[in-house]
Image 1 (cartoon, rainbow, N blue to C red):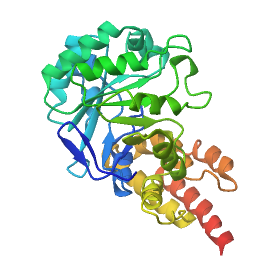
Image 2: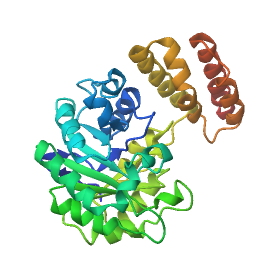
Image 3: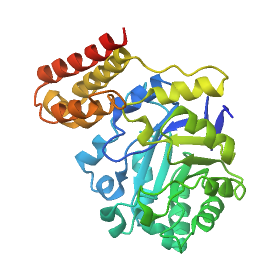
Length: 327
């Protein structure tokens, strides 16, 4: 189950990936995921409208380093020509281009993008065909099972994408109306795997290393894409690699959680400056305390802190207490 995976002309040393997540999969998080074993990481969603307008904030989402490669860039939009132009504009930053056809958020859907595309197979055909002609980079799509329980179009959409030259399909097996509720139906991933010749990547409800192993076992998918399960938990990749290699998965100590949390904060400060980093990192730093006693109190404290020094003092005090209690 732990295998290399080839997507177009890109071959990865293992089949674990960090999913694109809006507002979250920035450079610091991607670098940490790579350090713990994820060879392919994705940017958050990038608007093709912003790219074509040469929007500064849009291009900031593509900020990277040589260590942050290979990099998948996820585009969203609903116009085939604009998506093709967006693909051309990100080629120098990307090693793979993904088109978002699964985001369920109302703002995205109301623009005709994301999971709204699952209701328009003809437009999907046009989008994948145009983007395929615009770039030689590996091209993938990320989809859900459909718009709702009555409109389950994922098999049709995936077959169309494969026919137009798509190199892999990622499936999050919930429909749009479910958002992130209910349980992801992994049997749909197995169904898709039995339909396509190109690689199928599974996503959804991967919160622990054991979940990754089970998804690979139960669905036969070619790779997995971890999303929310990696937040405050980059060890999930190293733990999954250990389990898939027949070894034990080690749990991070409180001291290790603190070390990695502080590393993510420092990476963010170097990228954006202290004020922005402290504000934007509040939620992510709180995630490092998940499962520990007093985690909710820590989250409340972090959300009220403005500066770096009081934030560091709070984090050190919390994790030092956890370390002392485990002695």
